[in-house]
Image (cartoon, rainbow, N blue to C red; front, top):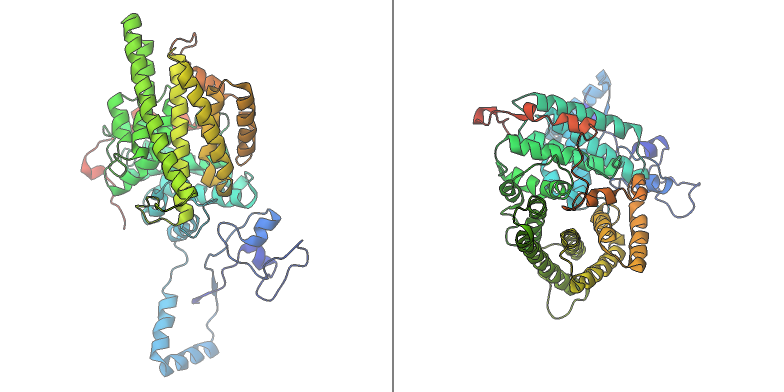
Length: 501
């Protein structure tokens, strides 16, 4: 029963018999005459707002090889030996390898041909393109990847949370629990990668509230249990570039992420972007919590406070310079002249614009956090207050120009708008920020953000506030996974799972 290719149209189009030469009489306007196999959603399914499954996937049809077919194939093979080799090559394909099929589904969501609006690798990190070669050796990574591609596909089709998405996310949590319970897999690269992938799934499905998911906290505990935050190989180096951002931002508010300043630096500093504007601004961000913590325990009174205020002002000044550098680069791209913008990676114009715009938006967001820190440290001045209004208008400009990259390609705008609303005092400007925030919030499942629960998180940054770090935080399923006792795994080489590919 040899397998032969049986078309690549999605399941809905195949059921509707939408092949070449057919048309859709129910469509409101021009529509493809067949499944165009677009990823992650074909055009017919996108127009109807339904889940698109199977577009572009190779299927196999198994046929009984009766006597007549066998004689015909034998004669054909004898007549043309070259064609006989081709038949053998086709039959050798194994369509039942689940890891290979899962890898194909992930590749479709991260390949350069996929639009920036839905491209997972562009929005969340290039390490995703390296995951397929690591599938099949770690249960947690396999389950997390399956949950990611399912959530991404259903979200791209209809922007709704489906039962299969939630079911696979639940299975992935169970698989992660089992890997964390096993000392041989608890601190491996694949398990750490699975945690980061589940962060993306949680982002797509939507957080239960505007607190923390538990996965960034879990990643920090895995790294801490390994007694080293340094990457073990090239893959981890690329992985940590994407993981450090969520850990940094959540670490500002989540008291469960307990890292020393040296550990923060070890997590953030990465030779892939060392001495670049992006690397510098993340390094500055990693110092905010340490400074606020020292303000809280300051034993030197006013003199000590003035020193710490000066440290925070210095960080703010450095980050503002980074903002200016990125603003200049963005101007060169949006208003080309005689001088060509820097493009060290040789990116297409659209990708270069989106990348520079995102870097500038994140730099503004970090500057907003630092401005808020200056406020709670009682170190504000009129000049800085005026500057933050300017940055807020710049963020609104980014929100306007990033519409073409929504939803995934502009997801960072939401974080910036939240920081701006918590920082800006001008009532009219706050109303404008709120309107853009409400618009962007509709891209993802974030209903609880209407309550502006993020105000409670920002209040935690105030070292002089009457509220302390909350004790006895409600345990969630995600928090329960990352028990430090379970993560204490030997670090000897024999416990490292061999890598594939």
